[in-house]
Image (cartoon, rainbow, N blue to C red; front, side, top):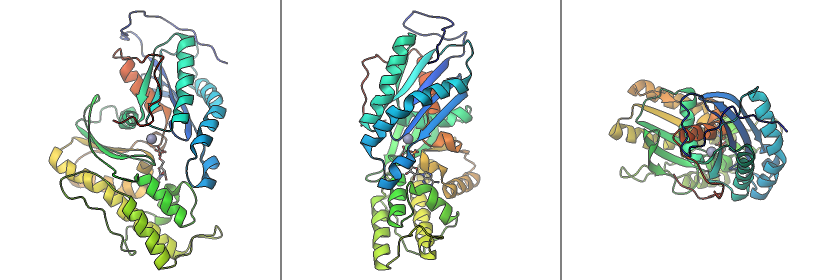
Length: 359
Ligand code: KG4
Ligand code: ZN
């Protein structure tokens, strides 16, 4: 195991880091990705993500017990490799940030306990990070000067929410899904069509950025009073279409049929319109100075194209993190930890996992 030599120790309770750029180790194990990153100031020195997709794909979704067991298998080598790649030389880690919620409790506990053990043995401060806050911060890793106030959409397998960031510490939740998350809908529709797991990337590839709604899917509409989302209706509508039109799921041989491609295209078009519509309405009312996206669905190429075109029309800068920073990763956790620790905010070693943590 690697060793760290601390360059300096400050025992004031309140941390002031004016003379040094902090080196922060981030750990993320909230769902099925095991990730460790090392951040030096805002520079990412390493950001390793070990995916468990192969483990869960035969079940068509994440199996919580398997996820936590695989985190246990993976965390040590991911940690060692992230530290090796960071190439710290004689420098020391100044603090540790770890996701403590929301997420799967067994998965969260793996990262949390490793972080506590390291913080204790290295005698460095540690801070629990809200996974959603980390998604909101991910944009600043590559675009530190993105202007606020910002509207930010988190769109992943577990979350679909719209926030307003007034400052880097002051967020307002404007709307969220009332049922399924958008990524979950991508995964379920792909499963119905025999396209495997995770469904987002394969639907994205098959739809090939083309917009159409030949299937005639209807959008959820809650009226102008709310910025909430809903994805259970569209999922059920696809299910009805498949059974009414007897669309045969892909059997794995050759290319998926034209009918399947048409369903993917219609679903993606409507799902992405439903993601953008509350944001566009909020932008008219709140006049943000920028807009950003985070979460696995932010990798969607049709979404990226549509959002960029809207940005051009309105003159509002639109930011997408690079793909590795859109999906779950520890660099975004380390970024929030850096922000907090540099302000003297730490957690006690008694911090527990909070699976239903909100933001
Ligand atoms: O953020 P993430 O890696 O994990 C969490 O859910 O927290 O997001 C995974 C989700 C999955 O539902 C996956 O199908 C979706 O993001 N996804 C996509 C694309 N890539 C991943 N959805 C649409 N288009 C994509 N290109
Ligand atoms: Zn996430």
